[in-house]
Image (cartoon, rainbow, N blue to C red):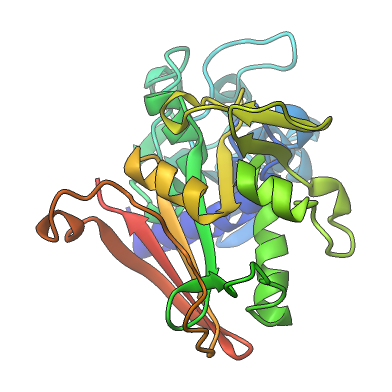
Length: 325
């Protein structure tokens, strides 16, 4: 293994992002075919889960037409599938047939139909199959892994607040706390989600659209959910309890408001990532960003969150925290 192997896997992970979220119910995987230091094929999981990333990369490399990929190395963020499907062949078979010399894999697949069998199949064919743990690959697959291991989507809580932690004026006015750059970033985030949720009070007070309003991404609007025990309007789905929410086959869930819904998911320990958009304003007697999250002591608040990213968005600041588990 070389430093170049890690770099190529990072590049494959960046490609994987193009498949999210339309690859559902399959994970968004990225793949590169590299020969003599040059990319000859690249791919990511297509809409609906097929073709797989490996199939796309092999097709671009011309592997089905001759020996162009012979002796090349494939970089794949997730272990190639080992099971045949009516929708397409096993990727381990396809990589073997292409005559590759190496396959470098970022993450082992938890799907019991593959789970090590893909790597074993490649090695049995004389291909050097290397499992090289890759943080970027794991991060690109976090929704798939969260659903596989916990039966729920990877959940992001978004809060847009003033410097003093308010999400609205005392009368409920909240448009707009953050600036246009932060709002555009929020819409791009929506486009990467399978589902989006607000609290019942937010739905009744604001009638939010929760759609994506970026040119070219309007069709990426996620399914709309509301945390409530009441009846919901057409086009919405209701969730009574955060601890029971499975959200169908969704791999990525975004919680956008309000304070009650945010607190409920935090209290149930169902938040995996926290995005804090902070505007350089003070509101004072406004509505707070969070309600009671069930902390028994101040000490129990520490050691839960790790700063993962920080950036400026116009005049606003974005802090990203990952839950430490």
